[in-house]
Length: 281
Ligand SMILES: NC(=O)c1ccc[n+]([C@@H]2O[C@H](COP(=O)([O-])OP(=O)(O)OC[C@H]3O[C@@H](n4cnc5c(N)ncnc54)[C@H](OP(=O)(O)O)[C@@H]3O)[C@@H](O)[C@H]2O)c1
Image (cartoon, rainbow, N blue to C red; front, top):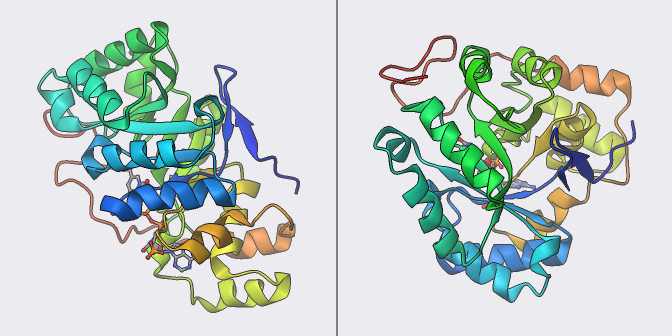
């Protein structure tokens, strides 16, 4: 199946479907990862205020010698700031730390706190041209339904955990039905299941690594992905997924690895099928 390097969001903005992630990418290593990423061909970088590396991402952007208008920089509003009415202040602090005068995608990081009030702030900043697309993260169907009842602007992206062992296919289909582009965080399952025999066999079959097989699988099922690495060879490896295609049968084989169970730690008050505790829509 053919995959294009860019995806058109529901507001018409075209963004790279493969970006570089920055959770646990810190200090000088984070700035260097931006530079290496740009060299490898990445044009999209995914951070969050919570990752405490926005300044380093900004430094990397300055050093990477790619014009700002060719780059896509994403960051996220932390839920304590959503809870305490600091949405706008937090957004401008992110802008300042990144050294930018707009961001490409701005996310509500979690459906926790004052969700609708926070979304209104994002809608306003979007109208003012400070953000090119507004989006959500970790919104399950129940959270999206509540937001969609109240939103003036439909979220462009829902960034959720998805990898072969925890796929979240129903949620992905729901997002696609709503015109919301799904995006996988932890797309490689944090690198923990790369030695699974099915992934290794497919790697041998296509002459690719298990990580490349997984990333290609995400893109072929219409899910954007933001793998993280701070290592040069892996940053390059993870971007080298546009020169082959998985057969339908092999897509199904990866599909069959789903356990339905996440191995990641979620905030204590987060609920997959209910509104999070003390959260207001
Ligand atoms: N919205 C949210 O709530 C949320 C939550 C978590 C993450 N995210 C975003 O999603 C991004 C990706 O998620 P993630 O970082 O948690 O997990 P991930 O991308 O699935 O995996 C990253 C881990 O895999 C290793 N790795 C990367 N490429 C590899 C390769 N080719 N071969 C072997 N190992 C490889 C990395 O190690 P090295 O760095 O040592 O190479 C790192 O330990 C984050 O960085 C962040 O931007 C968002």
